[in-house]
Amino acid sequence: MKILYISPRFEGGIGGHAFGVAEKLRENGFDVKLMQVSHIPINNLKNPSFALFGALKAIFDREKYDAVHAWNVPSAIVMKFIKARKKILSVHGVYSEQVNVLHSDATSSIVNSTEAKILKLADILTTDSKSVQKTYKEKLGLDFVYLPAPIDTEKFKEIPEVKKIENQVVFVGRDSYEKGVDILKNIEPKITGKVIYCTNLSWKDAMTNLKASAVLVVPSRMESLPQSIKEAFYLKIPVVATNVGDIPDVVTNNETGLLIPPNDPQSLINAINSSLEQKENSARMASNAYDFVTKNFTWEELLPKYVDFYEKLLN
Image (tube, rainbow, N blue to C red; front, side):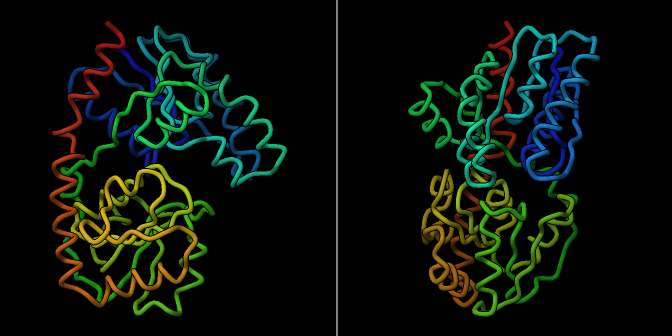
C-alpha cells in the first residue's frame, strides 16, 4: 500500500503527528513517502506560497499512489495535483475561524468563500478533534472521521533525566495569538515562579524543559486538542489550561488538571499560583492525568484504528 503524506514540515504540531503516523505505518508494512513543501515566511504569503510551491512539486511527481494524505488545509491544494486512488485531508481546527482571527479581512473573505470547495477536494476527511468534527457537520454538513493523535511513549526514552526546577512554569507551542501567549506574558509579574517559553525548539528540547517544570500552562483562545497536554500528562507535569476546543475532554477540573475560561488573566494567575503552591493536590491530578493518557492516547491503543482506516478506505 503506497501512500504520500503532504505537510509544511514533519516536526512538531501537525507535522510531528504526520511523521509519527508514517513511522508506525511503515513498521506495519505500509509504503509511506513524505512530501515536505516550503513557503515564504511572511504573513499572508505563507499559505499562497505553500500552495504554489507544492503544486509545482506535485505536478512533477510522476508517481502514482494508492492514497495521498494532506495534513492541513493548504496541503489540499497540493493534493489536487497528485495521482492517487483516494485523497484524504486532515483538519486540526476550524480553518475559517483560525484565519478570521489571524489574518486580514480580505484573506478571511477568500477563505470563507472557498473553504467548503477545498474540503471537498478530499474523498474523506479526518480530524483529531471531536469539536472540529461537530462544528463542520453543523456548519457545512460534512462528515469527518475522528482519529485521535497518539503520543509515542517510546520516544520519551530519549528525554534525559533532569533536575526539577522549583516553581518553573512552561509554555509549549507556537508564539501565535490564538495560543494566548500574550496573556501569559502580561501576567508574568504576578506569577510566583519563572515562566519559560518553548516556542521554537526541537521536540526533544521542548520535552526536556517540560519534564523539568512544575506546571504546563495552555492559555489558548482557540484550540482543537494540544499535543503538549498529553505529553505533560505522560510526564506527570500538572496542567493549567483554558476550556476551549477539545481541552475539556481531557482536562477535568481538579481531577486531571485545572480548567479556566479563556481571556481571563485573573483566573489564569490564580490557577497557576494554586498549582505551584498546592503541590500535593497538583501531584494527585498529575497522577490521574498519567493514568488517563496511557489508557486512551498511546499507539498501543490507537494504531489499530489507523491501520483499519487505511485498509477499509483502499480495499
